Length: 89
Image 1 (cartoon, rainbow, N blue to C red):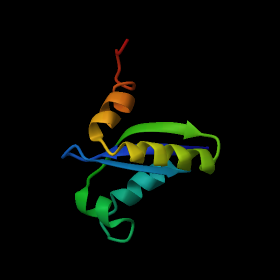
Image 2 (image 1 turned 90 degrees about the vertical axis):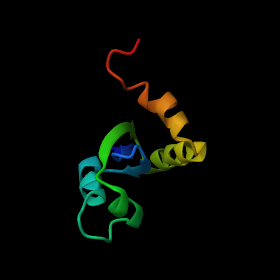
Image 3 (image 1 turned 120 degrees about the vertical axis):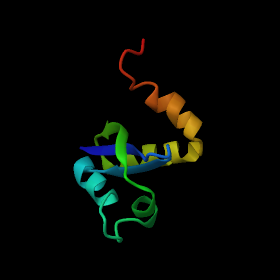
């Protein structure tokens, strides 16, 4: 199983990625030592805001590119995060 995920930091910024192990990737993004990604290292701490399962890495990569092409945090909030809010009709 592969996952497309969105992380969010306290400033409200997003990071979009894909992985086969979400828990490991979240730990790596929040790791105190540099080396796992300059952007996430400098801009954390990160929390998992959204995830979506995929049967193959190819499918996850396509979806990751699709979301990144939106280039808008507003679209991420409207299209993905609003869908996952509890109590939403």
